[in-house]
Image 1 (cartoon, helix red, strand yellow):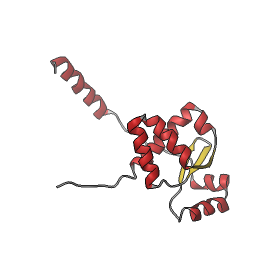
Image 2 (cartoon, rainbow, N blue to C red):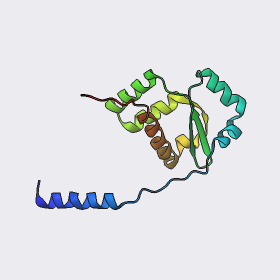
Image 3 (cartoon, rainbow, N blue to C red):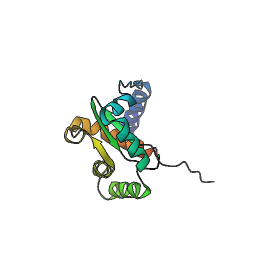
Image 4 (cartoon, rainbow, N blue to C red):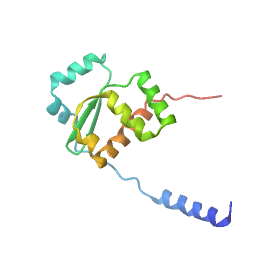
Length: 133
C-alpha cells in the first residue's frame, strides 16, 4: 500500500473518530400505535404470536406493525442477502412480517430507507452471542 493511501486512510480514521454521534430522539411513543391500531387489535396480535414482541416501526406520523420473525423468516432473510441484496432482503422480510401500517413506508423512498435501517438493526440484534475458544 502506498504512503498516500495510508495517509488518506489515517486521515479518514481521524475524521471518523472526531465525529460526534448524534442523539436521536423520537417523539413517537407506544401510545401512537395503540391509538392508531387499537388496544384490542394489538392484544389480538400478541395473543396470536404467543406473547412474542411485535415490531413497531414509525417514520414521522407513519406507522407499521410487523409480526415477530420466525427462524425460517430469518433464514430466508439471510439467504436473500447472500443471493441478491440487502435491500431486497429487507423488502422481502417486511412483506412477510407485515401486519398493518401505512403504505407510504413502502412507497416513499426516504421513508423506506428509514424503515430499511430500522428493520436491519432489529434483525441483526436477533443474532445470539457466541464465543470460540
